[in-house]
Length: 460
Image 1 (cartoon, one colour):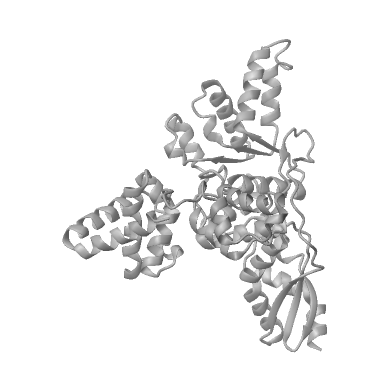
Image 2 (cartoon, rainbow, N blue to C red; image 1 turned 30 degrees about the vertical axis):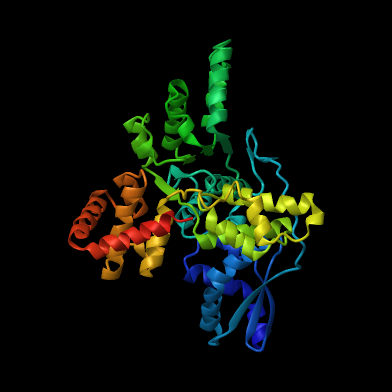
């Protein structure tokens, strides 16, 4: 009887989950709406996840971790029963390698292209990127209405382009809006070419007029690596006029950069303020757990049987970005593909293959995420708590040590550190650093603790 009721009310169950958990349309459409009723038996409900993604395990893990409780609560509310919920993939199929091809945007008057593998569904969400991911979902769902411009910044290979491209895919597939994706290099080259050709003919048909029409008659402009435009006087000026035209018209702009606007030395203050008037969000290097998840999904995608021990070795020793992780993995994977006679690769063979990439003497790149993980591990508090607004005594000290070490071990400014901690200004950061400096003078044990944490950070 209950099985029949659940099946009959399946759509209502999903809509209640959206309502009760305040899910956005995009989150509902991606994660909840495609789920179908499979079976109910012995107080266990099994739910099918359509197996249509390149990496279906990403979708399976994400849904299990984020929506199991939501379904259980919805079922209890409707039927008064505590029902166990399990998710399974429909029609499991062997993984296929992603083809590195670029598919043109199917959008009228657009000459750009988006990488087909960069979608929300296969973006691995973790503590280092969850704010940027959430902001990207909001922009994709309602472009130009909030977080405009969205400014995603962080080091190379951390997923900035992935998120930007995912925004483009979603808008194109769910609206009639014109989307234009371009790298700063492409934009610069187009400006240079327009100047080179010159103002031939009437102003209506001049190269520069056509360039402006191309970029200013879109609904969404996605521009990658904006830092390369800054300092190029003519290109920079042309972009800023385009930027103002789009923003003033309520059009959406998403930019990526390797640094926060406050660190762009050649950026005029009037534009610096406009860049941060929407929402600047950063992506930090991935945590160990995230690095392992990335490598396992990458291995699954390639159909690789490389051992967890080797994956663990790579994840522990390469901390900076996703591209380096995948590059190291590919070195080992290539050995198994190009030399089948080598058989299964063991950890010692992997270490030999990676000796020029990973070595005992290889210095560790110190990043805010690495400092955050080390402080979190030492004090036994979560990284989310450290960067939260909580003021518990057991969290304030680790937070202040994090501020102190970021200032001492990286080239981050006080403003950068404040941004990570979501502080309104840098005064709180300055106070925290000064507090630790004073306490070290009075408490030698605190100094020893900080030295130990620093040692953990810099050890490979």
